[in-house]
Structures are given as structure tokens and as C-alpha cells.
Image (cartoon, rainbow, N blue to C red; front, side):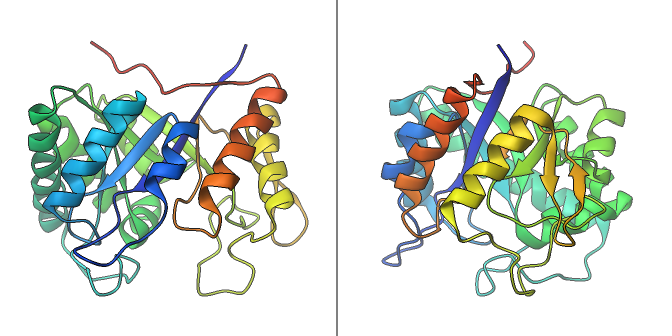
Length: 255
């Protein structure tokens, strides 16, 4: 039976402001990427989200970002690799403190938003992230866009990697994601998003924005926890993957 990981970006509330339905999504996923305070999240939210993951047996990952709280980490910045290295290490350390206090462990790291997309194409930034992860722990799994420079950088740094596919994001013919600023970049129709997820997981294929087939080798699929009816969508997606003969589970982190 083929195994696929199902991850979600969670812990993105901040103070009195609430984002997403973490408690509703959590029972249906196998891995969570927790915001570390740079694009969203705060110490109390980080602690509560770690506890929620531990309660549901969900693998815990750090969702590291550019320092852009106002822009939710989705605005690109001109930032040197040395700063990306330091900021990645800083955010890993912050989440790790809560993980240790909860008596559990950190499983993976996944960049967020603009940093994710920049590292997918800029090998210098990808190498900086991979170096920070390696220096923190060489057995921590690095998650990056399938076919991207970040996955290559992780492998070259000797890290375990996971190639990520997206359930509800539209692809371009080259396998990159359509920018959110473009119409149709997010697949709002639930049936279409579920169908894309099952196709990627089962056959390694998605339909690009120009109608052509694009090959996507994915070990993990992202379901966005901040979309409308996120919990219902996550449940339907999980059941569809299992009905298609797939086992949903996190990747095993090397000892």
C-alpha cells in the first residue's frame, strides 16, 4: 500500500485574532506545520498547537517564514542568505522549546509563503535553509516543492526530504505554483481540489493552468487550514485518499 503524508499549515492565529480551524482540521491530517511567530502565531498559540498535535498523534513541523507579520509572509523581500540562515535557525529554536516542554519531538520543517517560493527557485536561499536545518539537526526532514531547488539543496546537505504537492493550488506547466495574485491560483471547488490531490498521490500527475498534464512526484500533500470549511475539506480529502487505496501517515524521521 502506498503511503502519502497529509500536512496542514496551522497555528496561524495571533493574539485575539483567529485564523483557520486547527481543532477541526487536526483529526484528519498526519503532519502539521506550526507558525513560529514571523508570519503568524505567538508563544501561546505555538504552545497550544503543539499540545493539539500531541493529543492527535500528528507529526510536528516548524513553518518558518520571512519576518513579515503584516503581510502574512507572502511578500517577497531582498534578503541575503546569511539572514535566511539565522532566521531559520531562530524559528526552529523557538518551536523546539515548546516541543521539548510538551515531551514530544520536532519532525520536519517547511518554509512558508514567499520564502517557500523564493527557495524553490533560488539555490542560494535554498542552501541557506538547508544549512540551518542541518546545523540544528541533520535528521530533521526538510519539506519543499516537488522538483524545486529546495529539495535539491536538502538532499545535497544530507537531509531527509519530502517533496510536496498541493491539493488546492493550481500548477503551471513547469511544475511551479501559480502566484496567489493571479486569478484561479487557488482551486476553490472542493471536488476539483480533491480530484487533484488523489491524482497527484496516486498517479503523480496534475492538470496545469494551460490544460496540459504536469508530473508531480509528491511524498506529502498540503491542505490549507485557512480555507473555507477547512475541517470538512480535510475530512473529505482524507477519506478520498484512503478510498483510493492510499495509507495516510507521516514520513519516518531517521533515528
